[in-house]
Image (cartoon, rainbow, N blue to C red):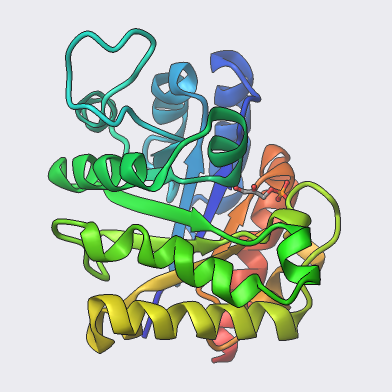
Length: 258
Ligand code: 13P
């Protein structure tokens, strides 16, 4: 049985003050509840300590949105996996489409980053997904296969415990257009099958695959209730406590319905 994971990707929003307020508001709503899954927030680097303090004792774990592809040294502007570990981070998002598109990040970097995250005992959330043009041209499955094949077989020690996948169709990110349940289930099942070929059937069966792209309180239950969808990676809706917790509630309902 795979535990769901709902992770909020705050992107370039919320400094330490606003981040602390949001974490406190989320924590207050979840405090004392026994959840059937895991809840993570991924603030910008500088907000992580304030969020950590505000979430102390609440069922909210800490994540980061990126890390350096080197362990340490003369790499101006970077933040290492070890530094994230030191401030209490447990999950690190790697390979987000915005990192691919705006910062030109490559498979080689994703492999190094995920290995560094794993070496620190943290979990990586590896993102992939097709752009609209690929989907229209009927290449969505092939693109996703290439994205997974370019990274997964090269990882040093990936397993169902330290790796989470996130299917994020780029056309659904921040657009308000969510993947239909049919598309989401089909792409998740496809991704799990490729993962089975690359990392083994056991790992694929136990590994969590999140859906990301305009996930909201109103569609979370249906999406996260799909057989191969194990949670959500939430952008816009993670910036409001009510919406984010509404998505957690949807995941809870889906988990208890199973
Ligand atoms: P939205 O939820 O804003 O569509 O963003 C999804 C995303 O990119 C999460 O990483």
